[in-house]
Image (cartoon, rainbow over all chains, first blue to last red; front, side, top):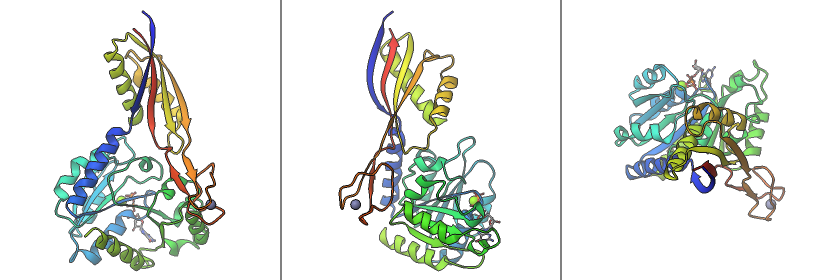
Length: 218
Length: 107
Ligand SMILES: Nc1nc2c(ncn2[C@@H]2O[C@H](COP(=O)(O)OP(=O)(O)OP(=O)(O)O)[C@@H](O)[C@H]2O)c(=O)[nH]1
Ligand SMILES: [Mg+2]
Ligand SMILES: [Zn+2]
């Protein structure tokens, strides 16, 4: 036996990149606007999809792929809103990836808008491109006003940053202006929305952004 | 973790192609901006390589920094700030890859 050294140069993420590109081609071919919604657990991701459907479902065909470690509660919530949905139970993986989306995407060829609700956390989903057009990151004030500065990478790569449940800010002693400033320091171009889905704050701003995004993929 | 699994699968495939009996060392480049904990990667590598010819191999991790530059004034930044002192929007490239650079094996 003797020892050899092999120069390899193998890109481990190559398959992920390829599958994400294929997803992107599929979405583009069918004129679908795809949005990867990431965020902390319980920050309001599913409620945002529900409320969006309540407003737009008569003029926009909406689909949703829901990533969850287990369970199908989110699925039932959106289906009630006439959203075409599919659940992906990720099991021990704490994020969606392009491969899972690749399997699920085919049945959504007739939608105009596809939400991909990622598993609720601010770390694992970051490194996985799903083939989406836009990345939306949602946090709420109840996670503490340092939640943005503690997770720089996900906010750096976001297209839209939503700070939800702002009506509760006083009760949980969260400084929303600090959160917005943190977001701006990490990301110079993202749209930042101050929101409260229960009090209808910032929702119109979201709809305006969304309608613009939809018209861009037409 | 799935990254570690992919590293091992690729290493074993390469080792098989070369007819190796044992893998002694794997050198991996890891982008600085990936949210991967190197200790966890090392631990998963140990666990997942058990019972394969890569069992007991050393995993050497080299970190690769992203290229962070302001397109307006040309300043290089050491970490990904959004806006440069000059007001320019800073561009960040790289720092997001996992590459197997080199594998040492016994043939
Ligand atoms: N007070 C208040 N509650 C909200 C708001 N938005 C969402 N909620 C509530 O917060 C809880 C979690 O909302 P979801 O929409 O399930 O959050 P999610 O991000 O989808 O959660 P996971 O899928 O579990 O990660 C629900 O009880 C919502 O009704 C808000 O703006 N204000
Ligand atoms: Mg949800
Ligand atoms: Zn500059």
